Length: 206
Image 1 (cartoon, rainbow, N blue to C red):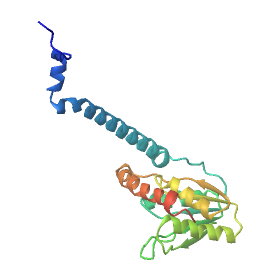
Image 2 (cartoon, rainbow, N blue to C red):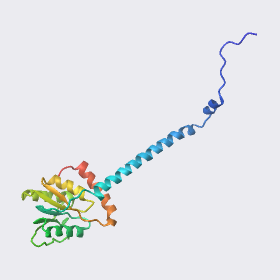
Image 3 (cartoon, one colour):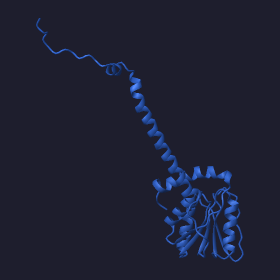
Image 4 (cartoon, rainbow, N blue to C red):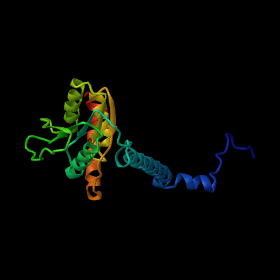
């Protein structure tokens, strides 16, 4: 009997046959798990960076000890009583002969303080924001040939206030912030991130 012509088709092994009949969703499942793990890991890194940046720039920002300067600028804003008290105290203790005191917007009823032996210059900024206050104070300081300016912002506002003041004033800027109540901290952080992003990437002028 003559052998049949042509090669015989090898039989599939049990393992290969199982692979061919396996559910496609089970094959894709491991890749989906890897993708989810990568996404969660990336999200964790982003959250960690945000927390670190918030602590470094807003909660525990770089500040200075009080020193003798040509003038003090009290910025208007949240917890105004603490800002005013600190600015008046610094001026009254002889750190500067002039106090520039922002009363906020035209509709604000913040009274102009009086400090013995200190020239208090109260002003209303029409823009009602930190940039406008820094611009006003920088122009005043340049006109009077000041070389140094101490600013009193809120704690969370300190980084942006320094940045804007340094853009508007060529002299030395000293930052001594007022405290912020813990209950106001979350709102201040949310608000300040918006202003800081604008100052860093959108409006980079004085």
